[in-house]
Length: 235
Image (cartoon, rainbow, N blue to C red; front, side):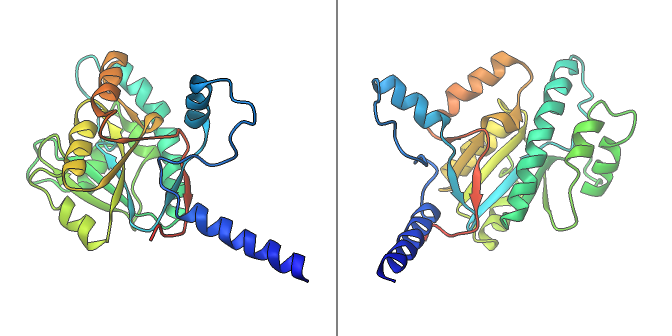
């Protein structure tokens, strides 16, 4: 009986500890025979990262997008691959109770609304129709229309995040070196913890994507390709 009770207590303690883990800590045992600092860095990068669902929101930046501009063919191809990964992240976030917020450009259509933008971007004539269709919002999702690059500029995003009790944001979408970057920077300056999954955002070119990583590397938490989301709180 004593042994069983002890095992149960250890399990509860481990569960509590894992729920309280921050995204900059790794999960799992360290290698018993590390070969050096480079080995430990590689191990940390490969390890999945835990992210509490309470106080977290998933931001989808400009994923409802017709991508109809000169030279967009390469971006469309990359975005379609990204959309599959982001759709899976969104499904897991929903299961964990994390709200999804679409932060989308209004494309200069001041009389438009989000439903009309979705209809336009999923039409057969839209180069971005596959991306928009795979990431089509559900009735329970939130949306904010933005007039400029940052999701915070002249929008209700901060008010919405505050009303939902959000303290950290997972920033995803298009384009990594422009609207995703501006939104992530503004979130950081407003005191939010920022996570940018590398495989859930794309830029116009590979060079732009690389520059985006360099700019945000010191101010945004770099998330593992597949975040582990749990339903616990970190408080």
